[in-house]
Length: 218
Image (cartoon, rainbow, N blue to C red; front, side, top):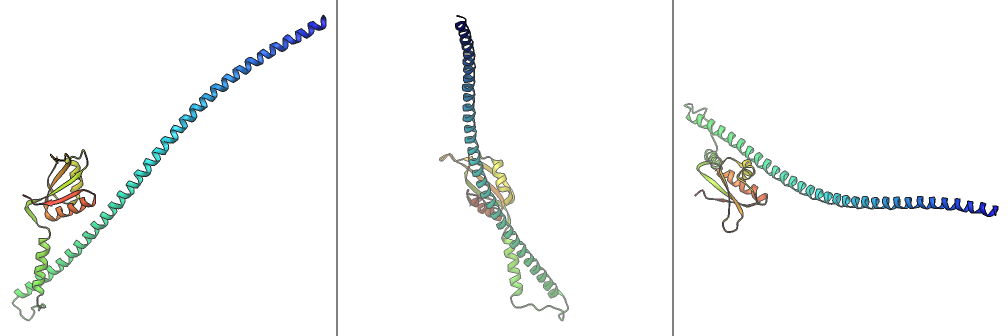
């Protein structure tokens, strides 16, 4: 009996330890499930963030490509502008030299001393006069302003926006943006003070992808 009671006492102690171990195991299992759920939520959040980051990277690449294309176009336009300015400066220098020579020869012709009179080559005076007349007629400011019609403007374009697009081409007298009554698209009318500025605006706007056309003032 004494041995049986000792064994029963030991069995009871083992049952108590087993119950405690089971309770601890249950708590650990609940904690594991809770941690697993949190990890799954974090993984899903990371996947969403990675997807968002990939979308942002894609957008940045597209924006970078567009920016590089815009910079390339602007550099080409700047090269063309510098080339035209250098040609104009060279022509102006040549014309200035020709005018100086012409004035010098004319003063020598008006001089009373025939021995000091400068003898020009045949046709040189007429050539200088024609060059001067042609250079003055290339870009003459007139009382009638020159109109440029611009079509294909994006939605929401205002007169200020069109003014910023065209102010680099030359002097502007008036500007207006309206909606086409048939197509419903926006189009603009820019009034320049010089015909050469209107021509330059047409070329520049066409290079930017707009439909530009020079129309008579009336």
